[in-house]
Image 1 (cartoon, rainbow, N blue to C red):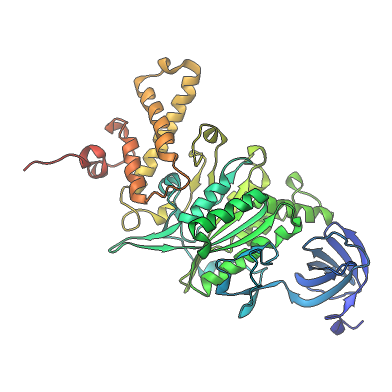
Image 2 (cartoon, rainbow, N blue to C red):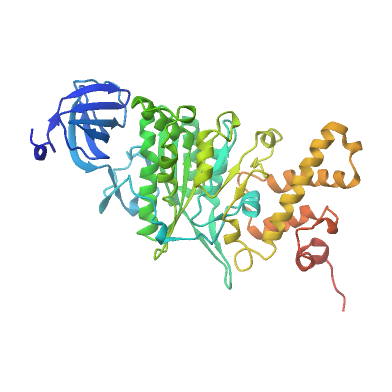
Length: 474
């Protein structure tokens, strides 16, 4: 068959099948990521892409349900890459991981189609994040502030409420602008779930519908019983939609990806099927590069009003932060928020583990004209004082509370109050940043004033409750 004739014609030359991978003969110049249509013997059609091509053979990765896949299947090389139609009509819709409607409405017919395997933002055109995002969650807003265009993942464990926290942030997140007249700007939320259970899907759907957030959201859902390989394209479809909304329609977009560990498992499955030499814990050596092609699509672009802020969520098997997925994600992203099973066991929500969490771009989004002049100092002091309190708690486990000094007992009291009153808040409680910072001062005020060593005197005189409540009589 002439190479020019391959498109639109079907081949039936499958040499081998390895899980979701097909080795196809009789095709000499298939392109990387080329879209392939696979017609199964039962008449169903599933899509795939070309992973490799050499010596008259092509390695095809099949998406969708591979049940019934056999050498009798027919292959059609389309000459195209996987694309999705883009339109503003996607807002308010729910789709599967392969972009099929799950809400009973018709398929999207866009003005154009976009490739999903798109390149990351050109570093020369990337603008630094600098605008504070108010999530309404005190521990995040005060200590690990999210900034527009940032990549800030949540590291969690199985059984912890990371999905509940993600839904809360999706409902509440707004860009807060100050300096003269205060202005707030809401996000369009692109929510992509990979490998979630039916009850989790029901929770997200009901939460978005109940609060009206569905009217400014796009949901991409890959359920646990859906094809694992579909998780390879689901986040890329989500980010392609986000890029269109942000850089073509000037929306500010918040992308939440859960669970990236499920995505990495799909990547590992493909690598095993390809018989690649495994690296750490069976994952391929190119996992870092593959994760970067997803994470680095977030940010701000020179000359574009819109932006993409990314919050990937990943579960750490057995709570191991050195596991390849959180470890590599930490190198690419700009910080991490880590959830604690110890705090969750104490009834603290959200159970954010303060000491190992951080936001590397926080300093760019806080301070005078952005949040408040005392924000940085209060955050530093909360972090220091809580660390002192945790040390006092560890010591108390050994010598008992009576064996602590008066200073240590005060810090122990602070740690308890900080967790119970500041970190802990309701699932539907949306705290403004001014309220959060005032609450931080209230918690810090149980410590002697001379212990607040990270806060300058002029800031104490202005914001400490002791001085703010003082009435000067003329």
